[in-house]
Image (tube, rainbow, N blue to C red):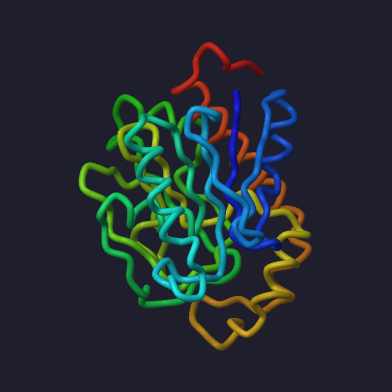
Length: 242
């Protein structure tokens, strides 16, 4: 499978997703928008992954490539591509799908529980995508904005601080507000570059509570692999393998 990744800032990388790609012998290409690299043609990839970043999705003057990126995402979706957006990436997908993006009631920074849709509410593709995912797990978060569900999308995840933590649209466009791809280095990178956001807050952890949580990182890696396996199984059954 050919996978393309859009990266918005140097310090938010695909993290453990790279490990999964290497394990599966898939190929990875990257557009680094912070270096003004050009976006690819949509026929050159099977799966598009859109990473996070500290910017707001409407900061066009500061980040002029945002308009081009949104046009590109709209084109990729209209052409039937599989897309996975993480944090900012999920907000961009929701915006392209005509949903409202707005300030959440709380900033959510650090390790907090996430709740998956209950099994009795699932059917069809949702069962496949959430196969092996517990109804409650702890994930890493770093966001202040959130989104309404796009029309036709189904909620996958929520948290105490944020109702819409994840959605799926047309069984192939997935937005995740939280970060399962993080490893200790990427968390350290984000913390070093966005430390000004670590203020007092109900859902803001202290820096020493976020780092070196090998137990939580191990579980996050496992869940990231599981979600990617499920996505591959659902959309590319001919490629899926252990």
